[in-house]
Image 1 (cartoon, helix red, strand yellow):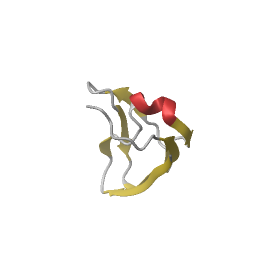
Image 2 (image 1 turned 180 degrees about the vertical axis):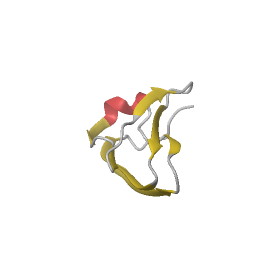
Image 3 (image 1 turned 30 degrees about the vertical axis):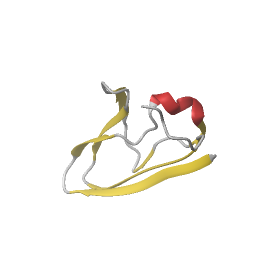
Image 4 (image 1 turned 90 degrees about the horizontal axis):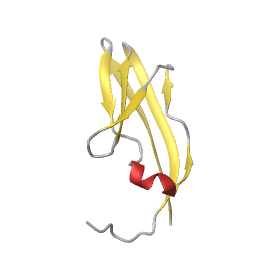
Amino acid sequence: MLIRYGYELTFTCAEPALMLCLLDTHRDQAQNIRYETPFETTPAIATETYLDTFGNHVRRFIAPAGDLTIRRDAIIEDSGRPESG
């Protein structure tokens, strides 16, 4: 089955703030992504990613004072069966 997922989140910061977001697909599922837009911010700001000790992509950036919107849209293929632990 195909699952569409995504987000559009707006934050309002009184002053610049460090943000860490774990919103990217886990690297174990990368081969199942059928469509994905680039990570986008409004206003455009620089972001960087790194892997944490659990293999999650962590996105790090400094949110500017005022409004910041982040967004992404994607489709992933999944069997629908429970994951084995």
